[in-house]
Image (cartoon, rainbow, N blue to C red; front, side):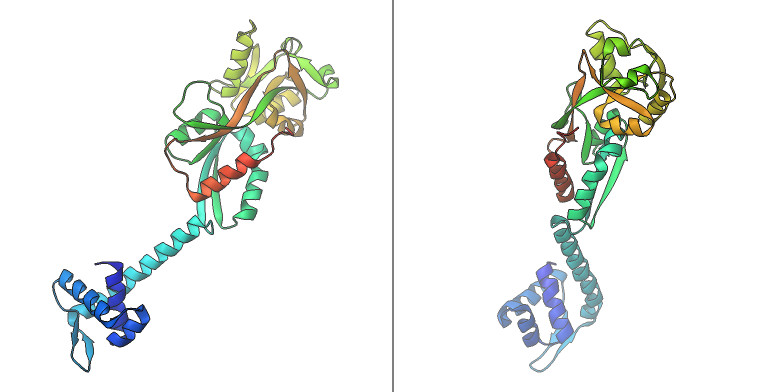
Length: 296
């Protein structure tokens, strides 16, 4: 059975008139008759009994009628839903983003997305950098926002901006009066950072090791928010991506420009090569790429 045949059957069955069905379907009498004949031959029997005056459904035609109505309703609903998804009148997009980005930069971006596409829902997985890569690779999400992978990866990476690490010190520390600080001075203080295998931790250690320095970790945590609270409490100092600076200051710490060496890494969007994005995911991707991160 084809959709064309089912629609022809319904038009005749509901009107019990080939002439009326022809007008409704914009078909000639011969074209409609051939369509019904092909349907009957395909199914193996007559669906209508007809003479020069009357058209009536056979028992088999009566049985097909409610099924045909459901088939056409489901078809029309599916067609309508797909049109709405392609036109972004409805849909869903899932992404994974490291918490520092998800909590600081993503909300205003999602606000822009919602203003443009109010009927498209968004699921955000705020997970550590390593899990972002895994979720994109396993196709659990369509988009990921993370640091540029440090090793070769099968994923596609579209850079958004360069994030530079900043120093985090207690508000009541003598260091808080400065506007910038070098690593040598910072590392004289008790250091607080994220636990391994955090990408932030690995990046810091690799940059310092390349310059013959070691990260003197005295406190470590799984969450940047906890690191910020520890610094604010006077337990030590830290270094975090600049996108976390506002969060650190809200927690009661102070952020300073960090140099000698400058530690920075690209943050961008990860996608699975060859896996075409949904219309909703592509729209969010386009908004991310058009965002101005220069003020960070």
